[in-house]
Amino acid sequence: MANWKSHKTMAEAQTFIEQYDEKSTQTVIVCPPFPYLLPLKEAVAQKQIKLGAQDISNYPFGAYTGAVSADMLKGVAEYVIVGHSERRRYFQETNEVVANKARLALEAGMTPIVCLDKPYMNAQLAFFGVDECLRMIIAYEPVEAIGSGQPDTPEAADAVAAIIQQLTQSTIPVIYGGSVDEKNVASFVAQPHISGVLVGGASLEVNQWQALVQAAN
Ligand code: PGA
Image (cartoon, rainbow, N blue to C red; front, side, top):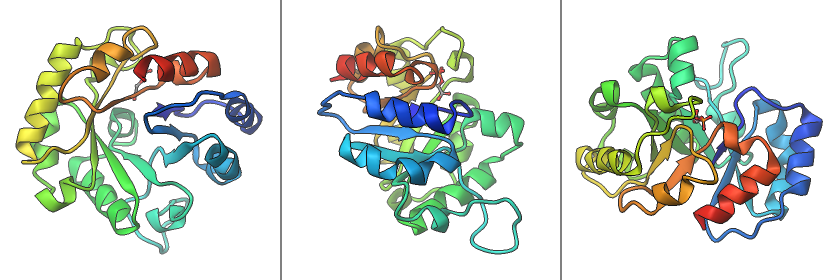
């Protein structure tokens, strides 16, 4: 799954999707900035790419200036990332806020991708019941691995994914994120408890992204 963060113009986003030409047997999800979701909807469907949002409001519809609520994305994005470490760091999001967002996403029929790191993993998961966990994806993203070129080892990431499944008492899909690229992706997805990857930097250039999807397949 690709997280474009605050990168790309509208034209660059459209060109990326036009140029993408990979038949993947795995689910491919692209998370562009909010304003590009709707304009990209048709084009991504033709390429068998699913759309995800990078965030949502922790409030429903209402007097919350500037906020994009989960209900507004119904029928536009199937997935939404919540609690990315950049949201926690730059926008002061707490475990409680992240849990609200995940719940609003579930109520709107979207699949939340809840991002976690070890220091707050237990505290964050404690907000959710087993039945909620079963409808989520968890992304294990060690903060020191994000954008650093220094990924966790696949074995260490797998051990954390196994703990997450124990804590949630389920075989919830756990994906790994943090400096994943076309060279190391296969070693992550080969792990028994890791179902996929969340990719930032290596998802921005279409040829590199295609090579990564191909390697994951
Ligand atoms: P990265 O980012 O692939 O650039 O390390 C991953 C993420 O922030 O989800």
